[in-house]
Length: 82
Image (cartoon, helix red, strand yellow):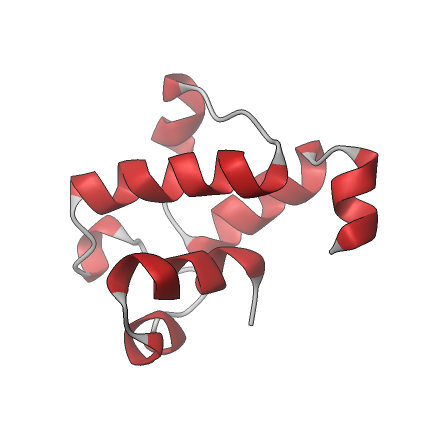
């Protein structure tokens, strides 16, 4: 399970939801509300050390978007721990 997908399980409390969403499915269109999206951003920042700005958030729509964003910006030590 991907890092971001695991965080979605934490936020929603159900693995079935996170596992049923494809990597390129728009999260907002799949039933995640705006509050959960903000919590996801905060969780990603906390767990990966990658800062996500408001401008970045406008470009992050899918699990794949988040995974690529984190992979491109993760500090070296965080990438080695993954």
